[in-house]
Length: 329
Image (cartoon, rainbow, N blue to C red; front, side, top):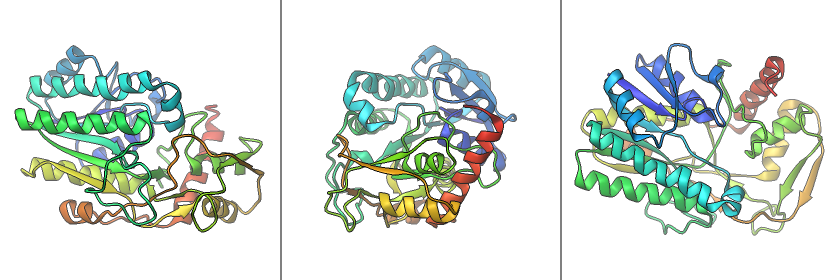
């Protein structure tokens, strides 16, 4: 049997591929390489270049590779961009997910793991947010993911399909072995942007909003190392294969850092200053979002191994340096 990883040439997806291969799984990657990279896919995996919304292609992959599980990462992820281009996000994140779910049902794939987001909660407040909190997305990105969760719920009720939706908080860091990392030019992830500024890939970086009701006025987020995140997916796959029921669970550490605290960490780990400019708030940015991850820890047996901001930053900086050596930009 094989696992189909959509978006497996991207940031989180490429880490997932390595995690599965390290666990002895056979892996097929489906990626159109719009933001991912062929070189980021582990050589032991089979790469199919194509669109996740192509039902016939997905069904052919399932049949040819005996796929019994799909882990779905492919999609668009930038909140401000989703506000400017909502129809693109509903197409990439919702419509194509609908096609993928249909292909899974038609092909008899019973196990489906979905890459969701804490953006489904909107402005959740300073307290750790649980899965039963009010769902109030403040951007088309968050809503596109929530609608995909609803489709999975309804499809599972009607068909022989079981799913896990993992709601990510802020993913950061890179493979400590240096095999892959966040490689997309122009990425908006705070830790990546800060590391690029520290290494001179950007002349400066901006802080968007300094008047939030947080301890230092900047947004607070729960930063999770990408390796801990993909480990949660592997455990979710194991649980589904063993007959576990449908599950929606948060993936975060349960505590947050402000934008300024992250910048201080990058300066501390890098050992040098870089220019930071203050700017106004961006549309769609929530004040503070921190996870209550008790459900994932209980149901998946998930035990994070990288809960250290400086450690996350160190891995991210090492990957940025490796990218510079690859001359991928």
